[in-house]
Amino acid sequence: MSIKVPPGACDTHMHFYDRNAPAAQGTPMPGHFDVAMYRALQKRLGLERVVVVQPNAYRDDNRVTMDAVRVLGKIARAVAVVGETTPEAELERLTRSGVVAQRFFNLPNGSVPFSRMDAIMARVHPFGWHANLQLDGRDLPKYEAQIRRLPGKFVIDHNGKFMEPVAPEHESFLVLKKLLDTGRCWVKLSAPYETSKTGAPKYEDVSKLARALVKHAPERMLWASNWPHPSVPPGTVDDLDLLNLLADWAPKEADRRKLLVDNPAELYGF
Image (tube, rainbow, N blue to C red; front, side, top):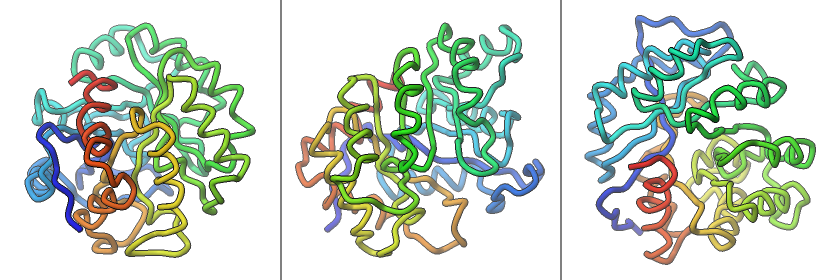
């Protein structure tokens, strides 16, 4: 089933890569993916707004991300990576240029682990930035207290990114639901192919979790393409197929409108 994409739909997680900007050692560099290529994808999927996320490949060098956001204009926001000593003037400049969040990547070779989260969020929260978190969801019980201490809002990537998909009754998934119950947590429904063991086209092990999340808190779900899918070989996934998974994950049209339009508009300030 193909879903009807409402006007104002937002892709809340994707990346740009420039062949002239070398990637950090040991990080995925899928190739050259620029604004013209992404605009073609937006047109194909019926998307209007976008949140550009700083890829792990570029660590805290935000130039490729911010150049793309400048070209895209008012339809775009950014999730950047800064450090404990980034000058205030640079934080102000990034905020003016569309940055709304700081990315934390608590996986092997991740650019900013959770050990640095408290200090960095203390710096960027006064600029209105929220925290964007990626981790193995199975570690949520270990980090729950730290995540709850975060100032303001926070977003958790990729259905919680349970590297071995768990059952909806699993302790770590129940922690994710409890974080949603704080009213400050959003979850991106995205990239099931990164963690699914049952595989395409239905990704049933991850889909089970996505359906449970939508049922629990449709008002704080977001959707994302994760284009250009840096962790898998090119051509492995079809973006339209990923979008149409929402027919299964969020069968009610009103819920799909929330997660494609209303929720991102509220969180990212569109």
